[in-house]
Image (cartoon, rainbow, N blue to C red; front, top):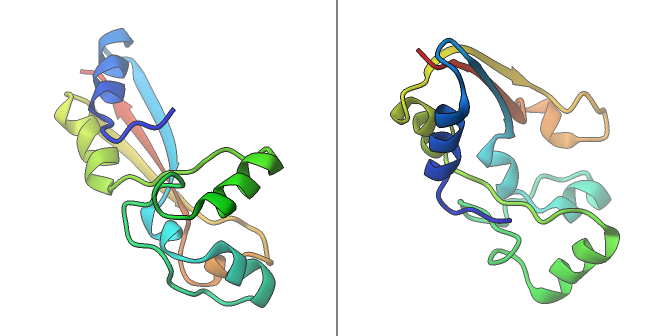
Length: 125
C-alpha cells in the first residue's frame, strides 16, 4: 500500500523495538525515479522524465500502469531522503551506519553514474 507519509512507519518501528534494538532499512534513492525506464532499457539512454516525489499512481498514465500490473511488478513510489533518514531520526532513532550500493548489473546505465540504493542502520537508545 502507498504511504505518502512515512512518519507512521518509523513511529511503529520505534515503538516495537526494544531499547538497544537495531533497525536496518534499505531503499532506492529518489533520483533513480526521475529517469524514463523504457528509454534506459530500450535505447541505453538516461532521459529525465519524472519529477519527485515519484508515484506510479500519479506520474505515469493508466496504460503504462496497467502494463506494470499485468507484468506482476509492484507499483513504485519514491520518498525524499528527509522522510527516509530524517524520519527515523525524528522518531528517536540514532543512525549508526550508512551504506550506498549499485545495481551491479552492466545493463543498468544508471550504475555508471551513481549508486542507486541506500541502507541505514539505526539504534533505539
